[in-house]
Amino acid sequence: MTNVYSCDHDIDATHEIFEFINYSSFINKQTFKYKNKDLSGYYTYVYNTLTNQILRSNANNDLHRYAIKYHDIALTDNQISLEDCIGKIKKHFLFGNKIDYRFLLLSQLLHGLNILNIKPSEPELGYLKSTLKLSNKEFDKAIKYAENQNAITDDKIANTFIKFADFTNRQKRYKETNIKHIGICANMSSGKSTFVNALLGYDYLPARNEATTACITSVYDWDFATRLLGVATKENKIYSISDDANTKTIDTWNAEAEHIVLQADLDNISNSNFIVAVHDTPGVNNGSNDEHKKVTMEFFKNNKMDLILYVANAEHLATDDDKALLNELKERILPNSKAKVIFVINKFDCIDTQKENKDKIIAKYKDFLANLGYENPQIYPLSSKAARLFKMAIKNKTNLFSRKENSDFRLLLDIFTQMDKNVGFEGEQAESSKLHLALKNTGLSKLEQNLQDIFKKD
Image (cartoon, rainbow, N blue to C red; front, side):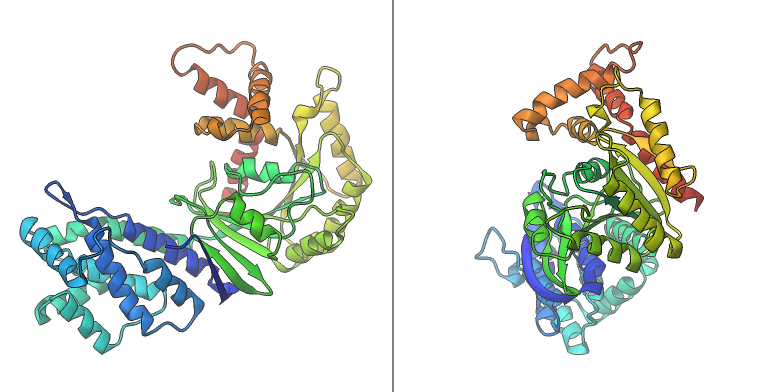
């Protein structure tokens, strides 16, 4: 497998790429055991080797070439041949467990090729039949099972298909599920990237003081994701793919790409009724780069948004920059869009609420929005910085804190737990209870729940 792969592929293939990587990852993580022996490596090697044999004679685009590289997995025992691996599958799986896994292997192989829009020719099917040492009767049965798993009458063979069927059904439902698009819009220094990272539950975006978000970054939710998948695009072409992206990957892409598309399991968001896609746009009042406003407005103009989250800075509310951006949204985007607009007042932890009244701050901002034509605005005051740290602590990732973050975490935990003075913490779960209460008091949990409720009503 490769981490980052250069290519020149059509942008429409983005979700096909994610489907292929997720499916291939599922295949490679399957376990097959006989007594105390783990034979999974042999099964995976046969699957990948046979898949690549078919791919090499059919590869006609960069996705196919990427798939060949992805399947190019060597066995630890590099002296063993493909024929030896198939022999071990027959000996240990078929005669040991009394189960013939070759039916499953052929079904999984053909499904993987189908994801890549490849249908093996008759000679290629003949090659698979002879290589897997299947008789004519067995091969006809295997093809029948691949086309319709309900045709399997042998309970032992049917049981081998259960996890495979469950995973492919998940992928099928995912492809058929409606997507709800959330656009994030803000001026510079609003803490937008920290807010997005807190909302998504992972540091997907670089969060620094300078203008870091030079392109659109879209994150699509997939409940069963175990790692971060991504593609970077430029001039309507995918030029880079990563099957295990991290902040370093995204940092590199951010400096050169026009659009980054990611897939991951988003925090506290479910695919049950809809898929949430969060689109982070550039901060638009960066004086050194007027291109940011143009990119943001063009994206909202050309892409259907179900919701726009406007992020304001609690320390600098109702500024001229806010007014200019909100007027632009009102005049250029909203007349031709059905998107709802929700407002987040971020960095509320920076406000000294002993000196300034929280309700008055919100009321004043509400009047500001009303004067711009935003009637009865929904406003959520919150602290993204605190929410992000608390979520990381809940996931036992405090080891990733910097020295400053560790210091901030302790201070913020005290502040946000002391908001409920009548709540006591005792026993083994005391620390966990404190963290969940503190997270709730940041305001982010309420926003997350309301986002789910808004989309359920649609």
